[in-house]
Length: 107
Length: 119
Image (cartoon, rainbow over all chains, first blue to last red; front, side):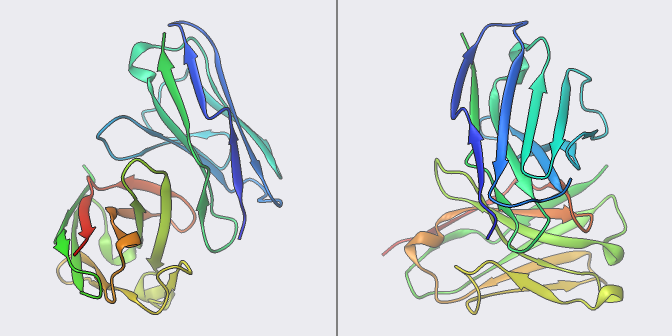
């Protein structure tokens, strides 16, 4: 099973600040690494697929990069509505797995 | 608009069974691969299993903790996905999400249905 480790677990940021979340895989997943946003009491929503492709309707301040075992989700100029928990997810091999989540809170 | 509406959650005793349903609309269900993902209270996301479309064999795959106890099926005539859960354990307590899986990405999620396994 591929283990995904996100860092940090928690981040407190001010509006307009840049946020960087990393996801490290225990073995290469190529580019089959995706990012989701989950706001409190809501279901997750796809932000970035295949490491760097923005999903339809996602604001341009969200971007992704990386390949192999190291990936990054960047939120440029954080907005209040971006307070949420972010998860990475790999679909390179079964069982599909998720990172433990990174909670982004507004200061 | 893609809609995935789960139902069937509730309280069940350990060792009991429950069947979840997911009514899908807004996309061509017969062509879709579908997955179930769960989230224990206050915890992260856990993939439960998936079913391919019938054109790709209609086969299923499961995560180790549920293999042999859970089954996934689909009724393409009703645009409905099912999760049959047997021999339930307290650790199966979670919100269960129905998802539309475009082969290797989980593009859309339902609102979830809560399953509580407790005596």
